[in-house]
Length: 517
Ligand code: HEM
Image (cartoon, rainbow, N blue to C red; front, side, top):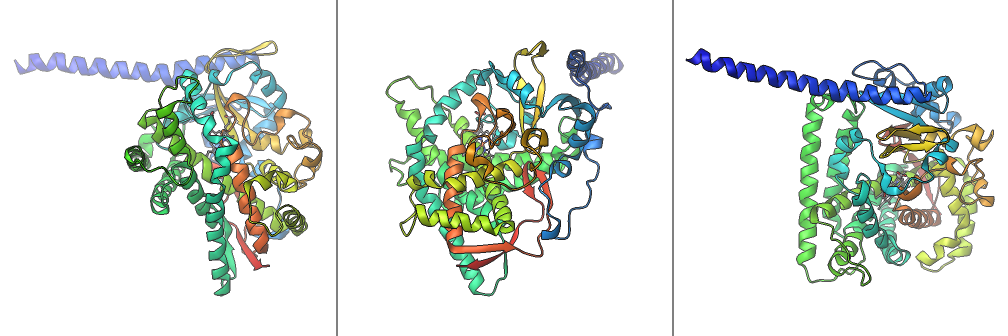
């Protein structure tokens, strides 16, 4: 009797296993190979992949040692160090080729002409994000604006864009002045107490976190620091495992990190959810304008002209995480790299100080003054060119896209190499790796790049960064306040080693010697 029962059971088990294997083969072999063949037929080449790592083994090869001698050895020619594999493949296969992240083929693009043809005529909602990244970064962004697609993207983008209007941003200026002033006071205190050098990167990241916590949700610092601490831990955890993105079962291979990131993601969600709930229940109007408050108000009132579909609490949580993650690290790194470049170029420190004196004088800093800080705008653009905090843009075609006579098939994953284009001498000329902010004097938006799509620090088209004006404001406020208080030079302990940890960052921080003015 027992044997009779066991037989159908083991048969059912065996069929289940076969089914799972067939499904796995279909997902990780048949579908990707089909996509790959379509791209090959169009004529794209690329490095040979192996199953199941794709080209990851080559991507993970050790890099050359970082420079240990400070100012003597600093080069801004960073493409070959931060993306050595792309640098190598590009010399072999050109500026558009196929490579594999695990079992996912990607179209690598560093050709602005190709990008221009590909993107013209593709509306924002027709762009998706590669599924491997959506899955991998779920704890960070959930279904927030960075990841959401199709009509949902249209809805999120339309709901969120007004929160970043110039008037709303202006009202957030005082938050930025307050946090930056606090950091400067601490620096003055530490210097007065004999501290010789300060790791500017670390302090700027936590100040930017405080600023974005306040501009995004308007919470007090303590909560902001807690969300920040968990987000930072989440970022590090994801980074440890994300080099294997696209490899089947990589989350099982990195089980500890996977579990940790899920747990952290849950905790962050709960913290944010409680903030949203208490905000909704409170009748108190926030003294300071913040993005969450604006979204909740829009949800409740609409804008008087159109019917506004609400963002659910879950969606609000994801948007808060998206603002927090997308908003603090990128801006902080833009500032950090600026301090490196200004430390190496004291003549530019002086020029900016002179400009600040003329525009701001002895008046309290006001956001309306910022547009007049033109040279600071050139410096910001030049820093975003040389050390773009967002080193790449990832997209997925959600329909067949015509590029001249070619058709890039629906479902194609794309990796747009922003660092590669920003360091391409064909686009910028022989001085491509030099810090020359004045290149943005004549051409304030493209810096004289030979192609308009060659300078993409904030992405392109309808999906371009929604927070770029907020960043611009924060950048100018923090830089103005610091330049007015200190002059600075590079510490001999600085080691130049830019690396990708989701964003482009200095591996060993940025120790500077600050002198109060
Ligand atoms: C230096 C600072 C920043 C840089 C370099 C940067 C860069 C980028 C890039 C490259 C994209 C992808 C665009 C594309 O796919 O074409 C993006 C999207 C986005 N960024 Fe930023 N960003 C910065 C600051 C911010 C800030 C301060 C916020 C919010 C507070 C923000 C929120 C977003 C969001 C929500 C998206 C998704 C937009 C969409 O897909 O519709 N970013 N950003």
